[in-house]
Length: 190
Length: 86
Figure: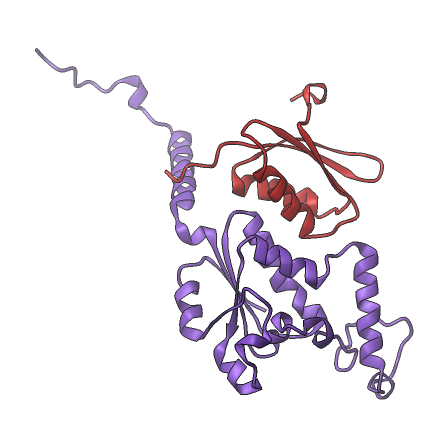
């Protein structure tokens, strides 16, 4: 019995076929890559405006089916402190980009009460526009499995105890972050 | 798919909510669906025009159709089988 060794028509590939196969294989490799399903975010700031991005991106990652972890370090620890509603504020001082109803000199915006006023105004604007509150975002993160990790070193520096943080918070350091981050395509420092 | 063939199994109203809530709530609602079921999502957040299709692509679900109503957007999303990690 002889085998027909002549090339069959189906084996003749055009450039377009090759490009399509490469595209499909890249897509398959991306789906297989576990790092494509992981996000590691550092939250280093503790003001109201900066508290939003890490929680929004963490919850969006979880919604997209990713394993997400947010590491809270330095002032970012404020966001997961039990008393975050009182601690997380925003100040117009030193922030020329903050929209003010009327132009105000720094000497005026640094008066007592102005930080509380700016925080109240921003919260009011967020609420009116339909932005989720920090309570809601923290709940979404915890319910959807986003890991909230407090930096042990800055806890020590600022004198925080483990019991100072909201339920569900884990504790770790730079080594734990790197171990997660090297397995994640998405790594963000906020 | 022609619009007239669309029939939703459930409705999610995200009007008045901004990013990331429409996607977060869509993900939660789709998780509760059976494969092949369709959810109608109503959104006022313009960012959803990019966010909902991107979310659907990442999670292997299908946006069958979207349209603009007078004051909001409507997406029809069909739950698909979990994408294989071949």
